[in-house]
Image (cartoon, rainbow, N blue to C red; front, side, top):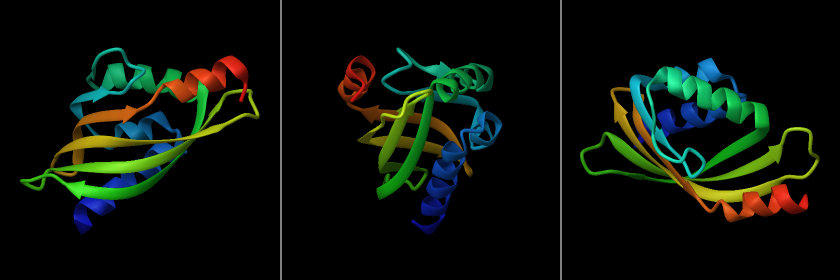
Length: 129
């Protein structure tokens, strides 16, 4: 799990920079990415670049990794995490918990599925919690 743990830390670290190119460096060219906000898969680096640019423009995010479970075969991991999310221009933030299903190709992410409850985000945006 050391290799996967190190990769997970590097990926979360890249996301914490909110630098689009640094995050993209963690993914294969033919990546597939899904999260509750994408309304379907984001496929390929150019689509991911566009998604990340909008995402990082709208949110300040800090991710902390938690328990990791290696998938059978060794080329994937489930990462439990918490994140602090703050809308751009707001002083209000919220902490959410979720998990990522990460499938690797070598040391790069080929598929990344992100799961969390969007209800908390809606409450933050609509009420300014």
